[in-house]
Every structure is written in structure tokens, then in C-alpha cells.
Length: 43
Image 1 (cartoon, rainbow, N blue to C red):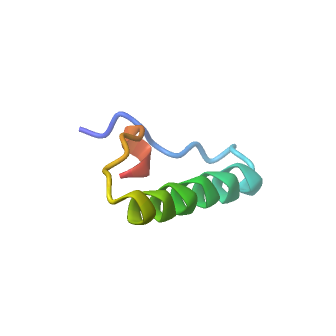
Image 2: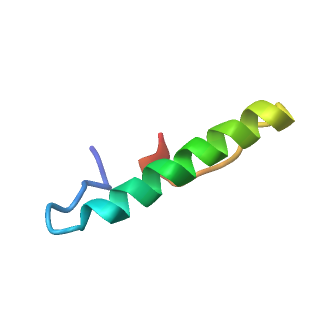
């Protein structure tokens, strides 16, 4: 069961920022070689 569901009323800018943060976390994980714990909606 999914606990986090995107809310339609959220502005697209919110999701753009979320995607950007996800990309930055992925890049950091690649750089450090470590798994970084993130909220479920990043998975």
C-alpha cells in the first residue's frame, strides 16, 4: 500500500524541485558510493 500519493493540487514547481533534489541525492550517492536514506517518495 502506497502511503505517499502525489496531490493534484500541488504546483508543478513543487515536483520540479522534488525531482531536482532526487537527482542531486543520486549524484551524491554516486560520488560517495554510499546509500543515502531518503523518504519513501524518492524511491
